[in-house]
Length: 112
Image (cartoon, rainbow, N blue to C red):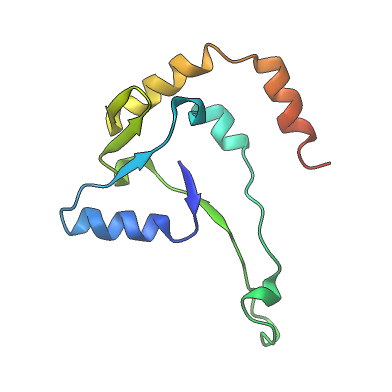
């Protein structure tokens, strides 16, 4: 799933402490793995993090990050709770309702 930068570390820390973490989102937010791989996440300007970075230091300013499903207990949707292992199947089911040609067009022109 995609969420604000820092979510992955928070989910991993919760899992290490034995605290279950759930993602709250509508089913319309589900993407299949091939579509998720095509999703690119923009970044803010590097000087928003460190204006005077020394030479040779590469600064990144990501706003969002992709987080692996195994780090969370599940997804809470408009239809109830879905276990982490069942999320890929849910996404495939939602994807069967999508106009893939239109979505492909949007993804291919998003960077222009």
